[in-house]
Length: 637
Image 1: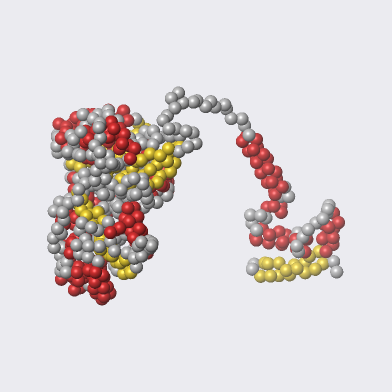
Image 2: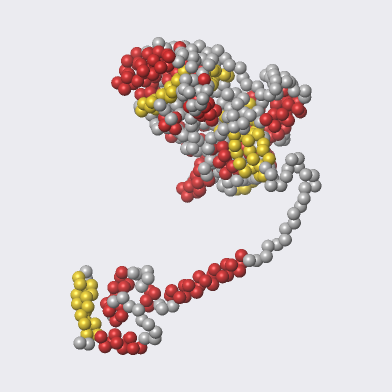
């Protein structure tokens, strides 16, 4: 038989196809070398098989028609790799190593140096000890001598080195998308400031994040003197307005609650993730963890009760955890306060059945640890919950032991939501002629109903000073690069009020300047001064008793002999050994539930996502800047 029937697929159906063996034998006879095949159809190379091959493998089918395809590809790739290797072997130009004319003090190549400084976040200083190699900061750890951290740090501070070396940072002064210099903005600002000075600054507005720097506070006072009608607004999306309002109500004036978890045997958290967020979470974590360790001397651990609306690290560490809706936490707090005899009001009777079962049991244990217990309210709970926590601590005798109250660390404590609302209304009414935005990204973080973008478009002159070109920068006329904390001179307060000095580890990599240098350009008496001179001048005057009657001693308690010795000591330690005194607090009756009903919230911003312009930490800011470019943000023309 010289032929055979094979199957082929026609219009989705298999049909028989005649295959000629004589043609197959002729092809085999004419082949040079071995010929490999998987089927008779492939060996016969019939039109039907070629059609099937193109239909089944359309990308690889061309190789059957082009015998040089695969071989040619390998040849080209081999040649490309060879050429790339030749190019990489080119001789580098000679470079000269220039020795130091004057060897820097204590600098030995290959051995690190350590400097004490601080990394501000939301205005609050995080004291750190930075490792530096030949003038380049490489690693961040906690400052072991600082009382606000005791050598500990969170995950964000070490990652802040990424922000310093981030190539996506704002690098130059920009005006309407064009590169300019600092001299251009200073020249342009003179005529604007002269016009505003004639109006006493009626059209001048400043929008900043939370400020705790004493030096910046003095600069803002000088600005208020030169521009009496100018206004200063503050906005931070991770706001502590509720905690601030409750502390003011309890103390009678602006104050901050400072917790001492190392003294507490029983801790109750009312939706407070104190191990992860908040100004003092680093020290709180260290103190709380110390009480969880069982040793030969301490065989008893503390006990933690957590009532929360969102899974948190604090809740994961709890001995007993009660999950409630964010709006139901206040009902539980009132039931607990009522069981302790600390008030609570009629709303205590409306608590859920689960809360009614938990509250008496927790109250019994709190009463058994009077003076050694602690009730903590979360920052995102309404002011009424914070007031209840203050009242319960007062009733339990915890004030003065597990919780103390200190003067607020903020230069100008205010309700930041109301402050931003006032600014937006003034912008909408055309009352804002010059708006200077320092830090933050309010266009991204402001509440949507404020319509900040639309109101910002009505401002004749908007200036944005920030680490990155972001959403707010796209709608401002001038964009000024901000210096990173590791290349800046400054100061800030830690959560407990301790003043921490910020000193640079490296010269500015780009054209960034600090907030001190920016504000100095608006003040005639400080114009042209460097950040170092501004900070040193303030604190040497403070040492001399010319600022608020400061009394400063070294860590041994001895007074300094001169301002220079004081300054060197401060730079060495990184902080000033003067903590604000505690103040008396007598919490009044907790507010009624209906007063704070409007402020309840079941969700809260986090440290990594809440600010929109926060530290890069894990490279988020770099990713966000690239995502902004992909979204095609329009720049204001």
